Image (cartoon, rainbow, N blue to C red):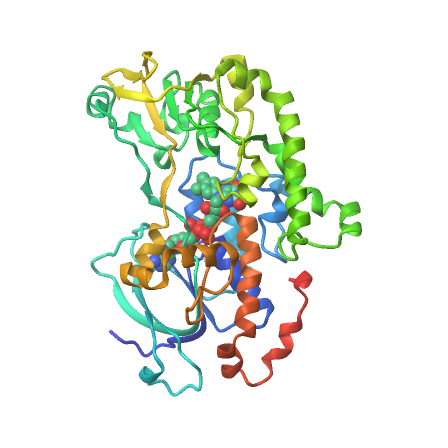
Length: 457
Ligand SMILES: Cc1cc2nc3c(=O)[nH]c(=O)nc-3n(C[C@H](O)[C@H](O)[C@H](O)COP(=O)(O)OP(=O)(O)OC[C@H]3O[C@@H](n4cnc5c(N)ncnc54)[C@H](O)[C@@H]3O)c2cc1C
């Protein structure tokens, strides 16, 4: 059903998480205010509130906040999930953004010039179908009573998040059924359904945590704090670093003395590539020495493998994801409060797990911290046909750099870690402001804002 409400905007942003809000805030700083955001959840912070209770940011405040919207001082060095969720919603209010929550974008279509029926002198590039899902549903599914509207824009930014909580990666093993029948359905879960050992009533239980990424290692710690007995299954080599050491590195460019010597923000005006790469390699070398000193005896004793790729190079250049930032679980492993197994699972039985090395262990509960199927939100929003037309590698390239999708008509994508998305927002808005499409539809002098300094953002 076509509606009579305003349905043309200079910029439409799909998704109002950190990525979408970063772009919106950067657009506002360039005085581009004709923006609408569609968000399928009922708040900006919702994806964070759906994660486990103990979760804190692993990234330092300086690189996790919007430009011009600092974290409140009481947040400390690493914001909790509640603090970060509140920060997102409060910042959106302060920005006075036009966000339509509970609105699911179901289709994106290119809008050709021949189709122009609108009176505006503006150029339309995209038509968006939006389902108003204003019911209680919080997932990305359509509700039967939802109503559909169409919106049009010059510039489209897709910021729908890489990890869809509805798509956990759950390995399948023989014997899972008998474990569930014996221990109960709620005793074999994915991390997405883990709240805390206290909330789940797992005090005193023996818990196997499969996977030792940032989520798995923190859940193991939570099990201990909640009075349970964890065993961590650590199969793959880890890029281990202490969270505080990592924070020191990330905070370094913001140190007042260094800031005077190098007046730059690494995520807005990057250093020349080769200097930055040397800097990362140098840090990884130092980090290797410090990590060996801190954890060498623990990893050797338990046969935990350390990845050859360093934590910073892995993140910045090898694109193998963030390092494992230890919050204290390694010390618990050393103390024997968290046990370790490095062998693969062969099968489950009614009371526990059999491993490839022949060990059989009893467990009361199992948590799979094995990640999510990535990019499903992007597949849903673009549809198979458009994904094939644009090319998945072009989408990933655009998403990781902030540059316009290759050969596309005013389409930008943003995803990744928070520091990366802050940087992408600036690249995206720079390109929008410089684009012919924007200039043609804003002949009344908006261009003067283009020269606004990045540092003022
Ligand atoms: C457990 C966990 C911890 C993390 N910790 C950190 C950290 O400490 N530091 C760091 O840098 N990164 C971290 N990340 C990675 C990343 O920074 C966060 O996932 C971040 O929230 C991603 O922001 P986003 O805006 O891309 O996605 P989201 O926060 O997921 O927001 C996307 C929004 O898009 C909406 N959406 C999706 N599809 C549609 C549609 N079709 N129509 C309308 N709306 C739609 C969703 O409702 C959602 O609100 C973490 C990730 C996880 C899973």
